[in-house]
Length: 520
Image 1 (cartoon, rainbow, N blue to C red):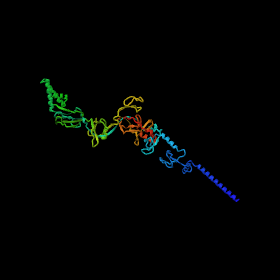
Image 2 (tube, rainbow, N blue to C red):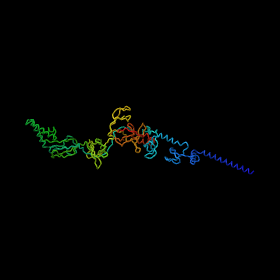
Image 3 (tube, rainbow, N blue to C red):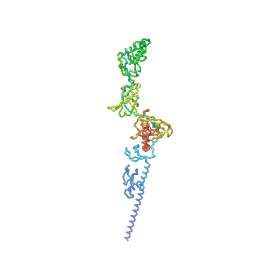
Image 4 (cartoon, one colour):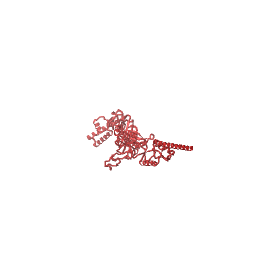
């Protein structure tokens, strides 16, 4: 009896333990089900890592799905922790990358947007990974008209200009040797009177300088007078008297007397002084004549120089000599007259180089109408050298600017008359329109009102417009005639593009360089 009772008790205890175990298992399952999703993910991931539920064979980066690893770790691109790949996900990143690769045609650097490449890689400047430029991105910066009204934004239409570069030099003013005259006495005699009695006086052409009493002159006048009287009275042979008169008249003319002077001397009948006159209009820069001094035939009395045109003797460095030519325009300035410029041109280039200074002496002919430039004065000068000196005149169409012809006519594409571009014309962009992204020059082109597109350009060193004196860059590539570029306000627009990210997202198509139509 007791034995049966003991077996019954043991059976009940066993059943109770079984029920208690089943209840605990149920509660544990319900608790796992009630966990939040993030906790479930963590539990599932931990179970997978511990190999309790699922064995993870592949790990990937959520930011760079092309990165796949057989072991957990960090992404080599962004250093994020790799996450496990589930079944069915193995080929998804590859499909996305293939689709993305088909769309991406150009790659750029987020920090240096001027860098472009047709293949992915590293930025040569900062070594960052290049990012794709989507084909749908236009790169245009849109600014509302009401916002533009509050900002000074000016545009300029590109055209061909006569650009020059300036070679700076300096030197001193000297007399133009071709405009200097020496005044000498043609007869022997005594200086009776001085009209130009000091150095520096300005004289006109033909103005009297001095009078000379010459016995030889008086004797010749008397000889002429007697020969003429004898010829009129018929004394002696008429032909002989006429010959004597002509010989005397010729000597007087050689001594500087004019026909009117000879007539006046014959009519006066008394002493006659020879008047010596200035051969040119200018300034007396030398004088040796003194009243009462006896002078010989051929003795120098005055030196007269025309200072309306002077020489500037300047030195040009050896490397710049090949750029200049005779006739090139020159602009000169001096500290004596800081608000005035003097104009001229290159008159002569010495045929040798100074071995000590490695420079070549150049004579610049400077116009000096007010006689402000004085010989010996120190002057600075700029020689204008045409950028495109040897370019010939051509004709182009204002609508399709790529059309060029060597002769006038009609455009074969639109029928408009071609416009003449004078020889030496260069496609130019204002210097203030160019902003630099590092070493890369960029210009903002106005595609339509309020829409500005950054454009990478190829330019030559800055030059000067010969008409407006403005600074311009000769364009080699990237722009076309007739395009409107931002001049005033380009820096503000560039800053706005960087702040909004417009520039960084559109450097591909926006910076595509097209060949310019510069005349070669």
